[in-house]
Length: 226
Image (tube, rainbow, N blue to C red):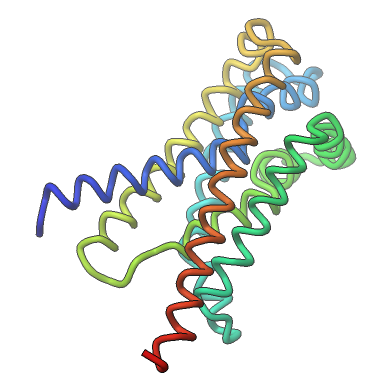
């Protein structure tokens, strides 16, 4: 194995996946909603919920990264089409986050608040859809579609993206664990600034995934002629 190239591909895969997943999950914004929805629970209950949400978020992101692509391929969807569609979904989600962040946050609060009377709320609604909802799953599947062919580069991609998902899940746990501190330090105004910067980065990532898919499709179309 070429370790210098492995390290380069690993770092590139980690940075791409981490920036995309962090932007769509946005643990800081999630901490605001988590604090609001769990205000009536004890401190120990909230710490337990934060720990379980972090674990569930890791499972959801890793599953979408490595199973979602194969499920879609089972239905005959080509990798190029998956990349273009996934990039469009990512870009659309980022544009929504940029243009109407308040409406998106309010929608997540309403969806989660309606089910907060259940006994076990760690997975539903606090993990899904509040923390890692359909948008996160779509982004993870789109990232999984950028995987290279099975080789040393694929191993670096697998390690980098998986570690990125675990890192984002760990940040979810930390942000929710210290939700009071996060809210007191940032507040809604600073959180919205961070959210908009993350949304712009996510928009760029979505467009890059679209370009990669378009390049793959063009290569497939014009290869016979060449």
